[in-house]
Image: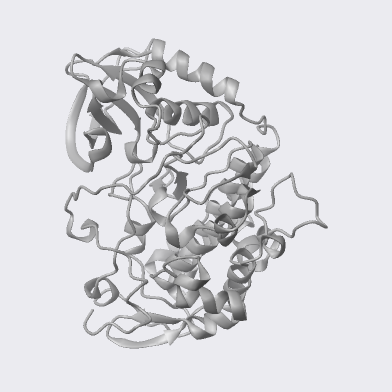
Length: 441
């Protein structure tokens, strides 16, 4: 990227090799979850390494970037597909009949059932397609495969693309209780992962990948899920124009899906606690539209209240996590969603940490407010001169960011969860930038 300014240096996403079509193993920086109601499923379905933020390269910002003037081209080819938002209105309606909250008892029972349901890996039942990523913590890998087996009662079926996570049997163990005994402090708990995803799908929650089954042989365990065809939001963002009006238009409908998905998740009683651009996948529906899938529930909790500051990645942590003994985990998730939206729009993070004394940019936001921060913060444009975020973002997007990134949780916008009264908190989903994206077309 040439000479990096002091604005860019602490904010760049670390390059994980996705733009070079290369699988790069990484080490996770996760800490003990300290809770039994947690899970982790993201790496089973992702098409890119996602555990660590990645860097935007000069080649990404140039070459395919379009004019970032405040007027978008009306004949842009992308408007026929990615821009169209397919399922948010329907999802809002679907929520009404599927809001039975998850409980720890249900998750424990589900884990037990999944343990009993493990079947022998069918030799010849899957055909390898390509590697997706390494899974070093579980000593495994994730591959795209074609599932050749027909469903029960069906004589023939067309091959189906799936994601298969292969891990050592000695690590995952043969049942959830044996895993808990062997690794009582492990935060990557595969049985919790599959249980929470299974329970969410039972409630018709559309924002997670489908679990097709758990298989085993003498050496390995295999967790099979649906494949997210477009990878994570970070990977998808590589194909967008550089920061400006066209990029904002592309991310707007995706942002609305993320917000609605998080609202529904919270209404089911689950706080994610690790939302990031790497932990949100995109897949193409049969109609060609993009659909959001939330992943990596390894730090999730079945509660609105939380404690501790170890959850999530440093740039995404709500500031109250560092100072309050207990805090609202739903509002902390809302802050993380705000960071996701800023990162997608600016192609860089707003700050490195949310501790005022340790991050110059966050200190400015806390002292002077988010609106001032957006005028203060410079966004890299590759070979062009950096510009203030406020000059690149629309007023409506800045309104959303200002609401979700409030450093005081009492002033922060919610994602419209049913647990909040209208007088207690306002919802970001009522703001024009998001509400317009959710309107049926």
